[in-house]
Figure 1 (cartoon, each protein chain N blue to C red):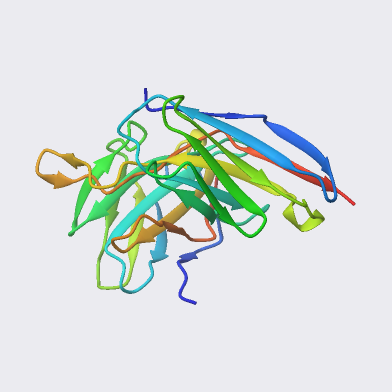
Figure 2 (spheres, rainbow over the protein chains, first blue to last red):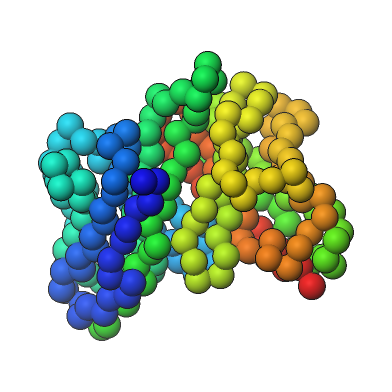
Length: 120
Length: 112
């Protein structure tokens, strides 16, 4: 129930094209859904995040679409550029959760990652 | 812009040895995390730390692992007796009280 499933595992897109990555979750306690971008040898860097009170969030060329009833969310990269070539991870967390009397600290559960290659 | 730093960037050790991975979280952050990523796999949660105690840990975080915040700036992960399967990238992350967790660049641990 804690899993986050991500697809596809890899994606090749032409420069200027649209990259679409999908994620699905089961735990309805999740209330925070970030996307992280990771370049080889680097740590994950937050790209964009959404909470379930909105169905879409856009920041520049990156858009998250969120479907609460289907428990799915997706990342759209518009006008993909070669510099966008990286691995993208979706994640889910539940802010404000408690374990006993201790704040649970909002651990993130990550999807399996999508390796995106943008061809010039 | 403040960032999470980690040392060393690469640690090579023999099986059975103890290792300590170090992290300096962003200075006004309150929540601290360790995650690991085995090569080519997803990022996995190990432990979260808040108010000077572990708030949550995963099944991976067994008795061989421990965390400590020895002073006001460092956050460490100790593996007492390393195994081959501990070879991975270890990421430290921190956050204040908003949702965003900021990740460090990672320490690559290689156990021989």
